[in-house]
Image (cartoon, rainbow, N blue to C red; front, side):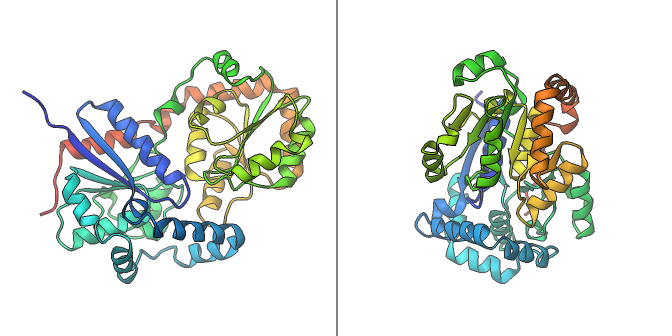
Length: 379
């Protein structure tokens, strides 16, 4: 007898790359855990309105880059407020008029949202009578009110601290489960370092990985140029993501033309590059921090954006897993550590990895499968 597969629809949005990475990470984990699960990932706005959605996302990106203080002010002002009914109605009319048709066509057993906007839209469909099982995965180390809706059947959150914040905002404790942020299963694997170095043309020496975020927006010439001072003693991997303009610019700069400096564009093998790196310099996005956590790599946080990135930075700093770049002296300190205590850094990393199960790497996927197995859709 053939067993029908359970359908999981994972919805995200393109406001930063972390939300969609979380959706694909869950998709891979679910299929790895159960052969009877079928998954589909959609960036809902881009799927339903491919002409307008990219314009909105580009405008948002420009605002983040040019007016970060404004973004932070809005984040704090709206902190305890959910997306109001007028906003969700407007989103529903502008972007998601066909969301109901998509749900009817795909007939998912559960909808999992990794961004607050699709979560709000599916919540509205539920208020209008659609019998949908809804799971929302919060992809930061904070609990902003825009994530919260009475129609969400279960929230998967990163930490006990986030759970406590949500309870304070009125979410029933029974609907919140601490699972950690889902990262792709590849980040929990540890292939041979020699093989990775040979594949990417890298040396076995102190290695710093510099990540520009999902949009490739870490474009601080002061920090990047400062790091190149150690290029004779430290191997530096500049990962520029989709920022092709910055990649070409650095390729033409003599300071970056050195055997120990590697300029890397978009890649699906960040996990392997982290595996052979000893220090990660990054913006503190929730997904990148979680991926660094899975690899046990120490992190330096570059100019967190006001709002959720600041909260992520505070959390990882408090846990002793990272440190903000408060001045160039922070980089000097870590370059000295790499030169004088590389064995100690690598040993502490191994100790961190031995306790990694405390972070429940597959717990998010397990929780979704549990919901599928005891599926109770509101009537």
